[in-house]
Amino acid sequence: MSVHDASVRARPGHDGKRTAQKAVLEARQRLTSSSGTRADFDFELMHDYADSRIGAALPMAAIVSILAIVASFWVPLMVTTIWAGLVISSLLVVVITARRFKSVELPKFNAARWTTSFVAAESLGGFALSLLALFTLVTDPEALAPVMFAMVLVSIASNAIATHTLPPATLMSTLPVTTTVSISLIALGGTLNYTLAAVAICGEIFFVYLARQLHNSELETITHQAEKDTLIFELEEARNMSDEARRHAEQANIAKSQFLATMSHELRTPLNAIIGFSEVLKSELLGPHQVPQYKEYAGDIHASGQHLLNLINELLDLSRIEAGKYELNEEVVSLVDIADDCRRMMELRAKSKNIELVFSVGDNLPRLWGDERAIRQVVLNLLSNAIKFTPQQGKIVLVVQRSGDGGQLISVKDNGPGIPESEIATVLSSFGQGSLAQKTAEQGAGLGLPIVQKIMDLHQGRFDLFSKLRFGTEVIATFPRARVMDALAPVVEKRNRLEIYSEAG
Image (cartoon, rainbow, N blue to C red; front, side):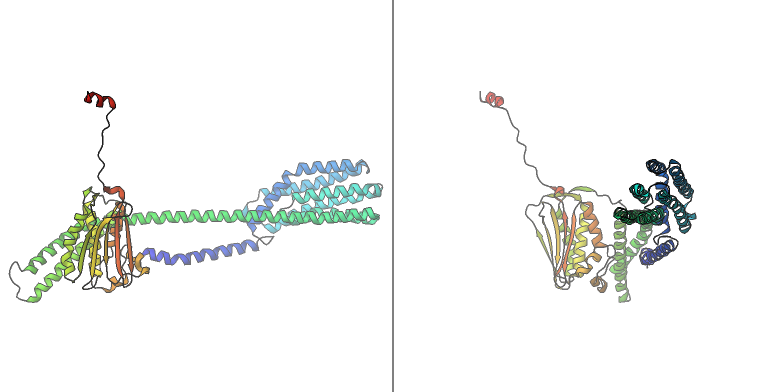
C-alpha cells in the first residue's frame, strides 16, 4: 500500500477524531455556560452588555435627572433629588462592575459568577427605581399617577434596550419598578389608575419580550460569526495541508525524475549488452548450438530484454513529460507518411496474428507542424495496443483524415473485445490496466495511452477513446487547426489607374 493510499484511508479516522473532539469541546462549553449555549458566546454577549452599559451611562443619568426635575413639579425637590441620587449611584455600581468585567480574559471567564454579579447590580438599580412609588406618600397621589406611569415606561424602555444581551439583567432592572408602581396605581383605585397599571404591566411584558428577541438575534449573529470563523480556520488549515502535500508531491516527483534519470544509463548499458549478445546467440552467428533449447532460451532473453528496454524508455518519457522537460522538436511533417511508416513497421506483427491491417487516407491532406518522433510514438503506441488486444483473424483500420474543425486526426479502430465503460478512466491513467490487460499474456506497464495523451496535450491536441464490450475500440488523436500548414492564397498586387494609362499610352 502506498503512502498516498495510507493517508487517504487514515483521513476518515482523522476527521472522525476531530469531529469527536469538537463535540466534546462544545459540550464542555455548554456545561460552563450560564445560558445553555456556549461559554464563549456568553463572553461575547456580556461584552456587548458591558459596552452598552458603559456607553449609555451618561445618557441614562441625564434621563434620570430629567425625570426627577419633571417630578419636582408635584414632589418636593429634596425627595426627587434623593431618588435621582440613589438611581445614579446604582447605575454607577453597574458601570464599575462592567469595567471590571472588561479586564477579564476568556480563559479566566466564569459565566455563572459574572452573570450573578451583573444581576445583583441590576437588582440594586431596579430597587432604586422602584422607590418612585414612595412619591405618593408626600404629595397628592391622584395628580402624580400619570407622571409615575410615564416615568415607569421611560425607565422600562431604556433599561430593556441597554440590557437586552443579558435577559436576567433586563428582568431585574425593570420588574421592581413596574411592580411597585402598578401596585400603587391599583391601590389608588379608579378606572384611570387601573388602566394605567394594566398598560404598565403590558409595557413590562412587551419590552422584556423585545429584549429577548434582540438577545436571540444577537446570539444568532454571534453563532454565524463563530461558524464563519471556524470555516475560515478549517479552510486555512486545509490549504496549509494541501500546500504541504503539494510540496511533498513535488519533492517526490523530483526525486523520482532524478532516480529515473540516474538509473536510465545504469540500466540501458547492461540491457543493450544483454540484447546484443542474446541476438548473437539466437542467430547462431558463432556456430550452431549443440542443444536446441539454447536457441529458444536466447530468443526469450532477447524478447525480455527488449520488453524491459521499452518499459524503461516509456518511464523516462512519462517522467520527462510530467517534469515539463519533454521538449518538442517541431518541424513540418506529413502525418500520412508517418502513419504509413508505422503501419509497415507493425504489419509483420499483425500478420503473425492473422490480423488484417487496413490503411485509409483522406484526400489532399496538407502537412503538419509538429514533432515527428513524438507523433511517430503516438501512432506506434496506438497500433501496438490495437494489435495486442485484437484476437486472431481480427481487423484494424488506421485512418488519417481531416477533423471536423479543420485539423487532422489519426484514428485506430479494432474489432477486439472492447473495454468496459467503468474501466476507461483506469486505462487512461498512468500504470492503469483494464481487466482484459491483466488476463492477457501480452500485458504491459499501462503507460502507452497516458504517454499518447500527454504528447497530444503538448501539441495542443485532443485524445479520445471510445469502446464498448464485444464491439471493439476506437482511439482518435486529433491535432488542432492551428498546426495544419494550409497553402496560402496568392497575393495579387493592385496597380493604380495612372500606371495602367501610362502603359496603354
